[in-house]
Structure formats: C-alpha cells, structure tokens
Image: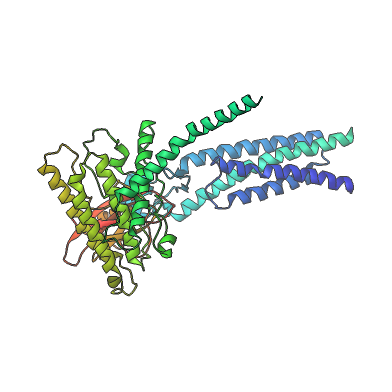
Length: 179
Length: 336
C-alpha cells in the first residue's frame, strides 16, 4: 500500500509538471482561442490522462507499454498537425492585439449578400468591418464546429504528450521493481 | 596621515560640488523661469495660477522628451496618457487622466529649433476635452482644460519660432475668455437634468479656438513671417489621426446634434438590399444605432457615422476603432 501511494505521488507529480505545459503554451499564444478557460481544461485533462495511464500500464509488460508509447506519440503528433492546420485556416488575430477569433466555413445570408462568391474565405478586412464578430459573417453552426475541432485537436495533443511520458515513467517503476 | 585624510575630504567635497551643483542650479533656474513667466494676473481665479505652473512644467517636460526622442531617432510620441496637473477639487483629482491622441502628427515630426513648414495644429483633436462626462463641477474641469491648453499653445508657438509679440495678446484673450466660461459653466450645468455642462461648454469653446487661430494667422500674414501656418481643426477628431479606445463617448459639435453609427459590414448589407434605396437612411437601414453623448459606446472596427443637427445640417463619414482596452475617450463629430 505504501509503495502504491509513493508511486502514485510520483506520477501525480509528473502529471502536475506537465499540467504547466498549457500555461507555457498560452504564453506562446499557441492554445486555442476557444473556450475561454482552455488552460484549465487542458490542465484537468493532463491530470486525468496521467492517472489513467498509470492505472492501465503500471503492471504491463514491455511490449504492451511500447504499444502505448507509440499510440500516445501518434496522438500527440496527429493532434498537433491537425491543430496547426485548423489554426492556420480558421484563426484570425486582430491586428496589434493578442486577441484571436475563429472563422467559420459557411457564410450567413448577410455576408453572402455583401461578399457573394468570395464566401466563405473572406478577407480579414471583412472581420474588421463586422466589429470582429465572426457570427456576423459565418453561421453559428460552422463557427461552433471549427471551435470544437480546434479544441479537440489541442486536447488530443496535450493528452497524447502526457500519456507518452506517463507510460515511460510507469514503465521505469515497473522495470525497477522487476530488476 | 592627517594630511592624506584632509586631502581625501577635500577631494570628496570637490566631487560633490562638481557633480551636483550644476544640476541643482539648473533646476532652480528652470523653476524660477516658469514661475516668472506666468505672473499672477488679477483676472485669474483662485488656484488657477498653480494649475498654469503645473501645466507649463508638463509641457516643458514633453518638449524636452520630444527633443530627446528625436535626437535618439526613436518615435517621439508614445501612447501614454498625459499626467494631469494638480486639480482644484477632489472630484477633478479622481477623474481619469486626460488621454492624449496617440499620433499627433505635427508633434511627432516636430523638432525644436529646426525649420518646420508643416501646418501647426494647436488643438490636436482637442485632447484636453477627452474626459469622462462626470462634470458636476464644470468650472474646475474647465479651469484645468484652460491651463493645459494655454500652456500647450504657448509652448508649441514658441517651439515653432513664433515671436511672442504675435501670440501673447491673442493667447491672453483666449485664456481670459475661457476663464469667463469657467465662471459661467455652473449656472448652465443646472439647466440640464443630469447637471452635465460639457455639451454647453464644447459649443462655446469652439468659437474661441477659431478666433485664436484666426488672430494668429492674421498676425503671421500681417508681419509676413515665413512660419508654419496655423491649421484649423479637422471636422471629426479625426479619421485615422488618432486611435480611440473601443469604449468611446461620441459627441456632436455643436452639442444639439445627434450621432448614429453602423458597422461598415451592415452598411454594405443595406446598400446591397434591394428595398433599401439609401443606406444612410436611419429609418430603413435597421443597423444604425444612436450613440448618446453621455454614454460610453462599444465601438470596434470600421464604422460609418452620421450626425444631424436641428437646423438640418448633416455630417457623414467613416472611421476605424482599433484599440480594445484602456480608458474611454471622447470623439467629436463636427458640423461641415
């Protein structure tokens, strides 16, 4: 029991260390612009992922752990790639500020009336003319879907990262015990 | 040994004198110069001279900073708010700092002692009027505006090479008229239910500024001086000449006008809608919204505006609101 608690604290420590990644990422303006408290959501998910990985892999064999590491790496790289693509396509930074807005992929009837064939790939001037409110230009459903995809890919990236580290730490403990 | 100690004491004393005395002397001279340049006139209300002294010190500091910034080839004007001179009342002291427009073009280009041919804008966006409308003590507020504006005008004219005999008379008249306004303002504040005298003041200050500009221009032409002309203020303060914050007070000048705004996108929507023949129509284009002079409005991005006065005069235009935080400022829409 004592050994279990000691190792649990160790994994939680690693999880807490990685929970700070979103904070650093936010400093680098990497995190998604939506939802507003994405930093806390990421930190919670990191904690959850570290506990889950610990629970599932602490007694696993080497082969199974390696599969976990490969899966977590794929999740990390895949999540990051998708996130960056979506970010480049749909996130607009307001000039001279650090504020960002998420575009949609389907124009509102009003935007269709003004911009016609340019829809849905509107210039950033369109956002400035519409008070930087994307829902004036794109439908709510399209903006919501993009927001969810951005957030999901970001969370996949952070969860994959902490899972990979968690598996390695748990494996290290397992290996030490075996040896 | 004693000789060595005495020598060291003497050396330290000399070093102190050499290091600090010139600075102290310069400081005293500077303070004296400012104090002597503003005599205590009989028509000055109580406490006004102290405001003038403080405003003069600020302007002097601003000019020196510009000179220094220009010498080091860095941008001359920052977006920091200008500190206020000591206020006459507690209420004035609690009011937010007077915001100075971010890019006063002439100041930014100005060089003390160097030839300047650009028009001289003595009232750039009337920045001393950019305050919150909490003016239940309008006399105090106007005294402060007057001190700042007179100090600003005086320093700018001197730095642009205007001889004092040309501007001292008109500036003195302007100051006297502004002080008279300050005395009348409390009575007019009582005419409005909210006690706000600022609309009344802004409509009175305008002609005084125009008169001062005309007098200075007349003097310059009469004496055939090869100096920069005095610019008349823009109609609106001013498209792309300053960057107001997102929350703004929009006021018509004269104050009996009403102002409406619309995001450019919705203006285009109305323009492209078949059954709306005129996108400037407030009744037909439903996105026009009226902004009230005493309420801070959230204005973001590019906006069209139109102001209408009781006599039927209309002023229209467009401006961009780019900042998203900071203190609210006042935007004036002036009649054509």
